[in-house]
Amino acid sequence: MKLLNYYIVNFAKTLRLTLLIACLPWIVISGCASTHSLEETKEHDLQAYVANLAGAADPGTTITTVNLTTNQERTITTGTEPSAFAVAPDGSTVYVANRGSDTVSVIDAYTDKVTSTIKVGLEPDAVATSSNGAFIVVANLDDNNINIVNTRTNQVVTTVSTLQEPDAVAVTPNNHYAYVADFGANKVTVVRINSNLTARSVISIPVGIEPDAVAISPQGTTVYVGNFGSNSITSIPLTGSNGENLACGPLDDPCRSIPAGRDPTNIAFSLNGETAYVTGGDSLTLISVSRASPSVSIPLGETAEAVALSSNGKMAYIADEQGYITPINLRSEKPTKPIPVGGHPVAIAVTLLGRGTG
Image (cartoon, rainbow, N blue to C red):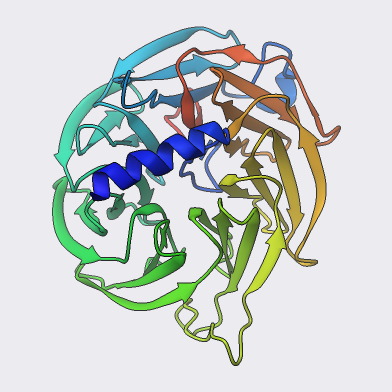
């Protein structure tokens, strides 16, 4: 019944033209055109990784890499229905959550070869890495839990139950907490992670309808949750001494709801944490974090699934469901020429060629 409910929900999401991704704000990224400026990077070419999830009737088994200077493309075979990325802090490794095969593929970023396959829970729909690179967290949508994986051994060491249909996850910069969006419960589960990688759920925070994305500011002060079903962002301040929030509640609720365009599916913060970039519907919405309100919406004309930012903060790269990467010049706030990549991209990470990623 859970699986049937999931595909019903996913079909409804497709009709409303959306889905997800997971990316880290300090990577040249989550989640693009022949016309982008060479000032984008002076020492390295940019490369995009794009997850081609496709769908249950026609599952994809590959991700596409694109040199964003030459537009040269290649494919890497991973597992079935690749749906999300995380990139190691040192840029050496790309992790791909394969929703259809219940695995995470480990890719050497220097060779673009799959070096290991990690068996995880049912329908892994999101993956996030710790800032020290010691572990990744995988959200298993149909198992209602997360796996914590030791990246030295590539083995699952801890499993923690969440609520219902976890489909997005982010780790605080101090590596003490994971915030997990429970799509089916309209809540976020906060998981405390210990130094030995044991973990436990500590609280569930009510958010909007169908939370489908989660991101944490680089400074570790704010969690943004994208609520697919209520067209909003829930802003959660990290007020605890260790970077957690245990205070959201009906009597004294510091969590704000911010309009975020239609069907938000992915969020990336600027490096200074002042702006959040939200994909959803056919636009990219820029949200001022200090004002807790949208500042501009950039129309794209296609379904915006995921966003990745360049390391210098001048460009955003959009993966759209129609099979393109669309670059956006963030100074002019205008999209440039899309790059066709085929498939149905749902996640994007942008890396620096020449020194792995990041």
